[in-house]
Amino acid sequence: MARWIGRENVRKRLEALDGGRTTYAAGAVTFETADETIVVRPVFGLSHEGAYEGIVVEPLIEALFGERVVAAVLVRLGGFAVGVFEGERLVASKVGSRFVKGRHKKGGSSSGRFRRRREEQARALIEAAAETAVRVLEPWRPKIEHVALGGDRRAIDALLEDERLGWLEEKRLQRFFTTEDPRQRTLERLPYDLYAAEVETISLDSGRKGEQP
Image (tube, rainbow, N blue to C red; front, side, top):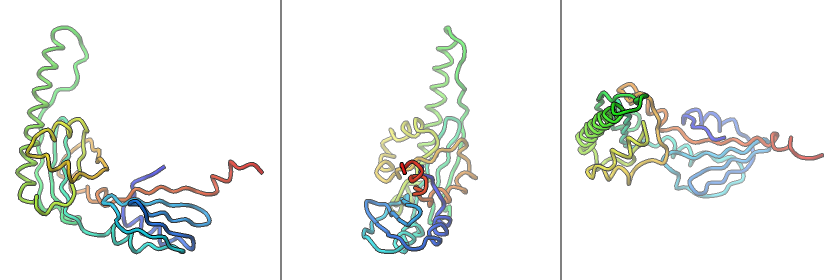
């Protein structure tokens, strides 16, 4: 099963490998040893390709530790956070919140009124998040290389309907950054996840257990 692992921990994990074979292809690196196979996919992609006898980590490390300019937009019903990172440094940010009622548990006419009120509150939050995203990101737009979107998928989908933010879709990362609480501290902790890599480890011993003698 694949996991997202911080880039420094990925480096330490790979330094322990000895012997084997390395293949760079299709945005991923496969390290094959006598005991296991490790597949690493950097979040920002990997252009290098090649096959090597032995463990070759340099192109991967270069990709993992390259500094990027990344916009982050996190939205949930209740709050939002928008920021710009140069490498791991947060250089611009703004957070906000709007009250959105929870779901109604009763039926009847009151349920309809409750739903309409909740929808109005949700629209107000999305509009506030969109205005904030425009103000924070537009000055950085020429420099932004990637966009990290997170929070709640439906809220983000609603945000992207704003034509002023259509360009975010073009630069969005494949990974969606889930969070329950889009606040300033959430942004400040985001670089660990931003630069994490997807790592899948396959133990050859576990595969042998299922073999017939």
